[in-house]
Image 1 (cartoon, helix red, strand yellow):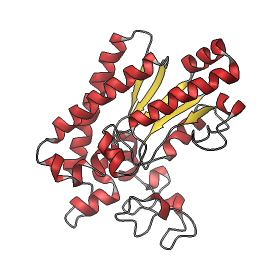
Image 2: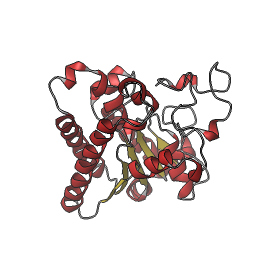
Image 3: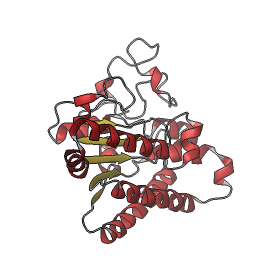
Image 4: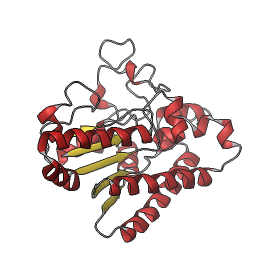
Length: 262
């Protein structure tokens, strides 16, 4: 089973991770009509694009917050128990795989553009604030019987098209300072992973490195099967956050999406 708690616009990660692990079907979005009955045995997708560790990030992006996603998971457990009985449900929850992917929107769609944050907190302080929330959230999942959890850190956010447009000052290269912020956050995540696995010996927690693989793809696109690393496939490709622009009927959407990293 695959479970997902997710915010980022890089939503393909979840399906890719499930495919690599051999899953042939994807868990339905938890709030969809399909997430009923026996379909609950596949898992559930609690994703809400634009959410974050910080509750105000979710509010700004009209997304379900971390707290709300956790409550949906608890509700899911109650529904699963009705379908399978308590003993089977407990086993399913314990041995399932959980993927947690927050923090990109906390920076790109909140901190970097929010003077109320940048004037009072350094990137390092903000990272520590987010990682403390991450620590508590993993503890919550543990006490809800989750034991196998994969967590994605930050990608090289200084290479995202919107970040280059906003902070590159005319350059088409990655914004090194923003990538430095991502590395700082990831170091804190890794340190917290070590503390959590010591605290809970039966917890299998892994912070998954997406920073270096994505940076390699951006720097060596042809080697990795891509052509376009600067522009996204949505709208102008230089700024858009909104995913509604990414469909084949929208004006501006590229016709060769497989060539684009973003």
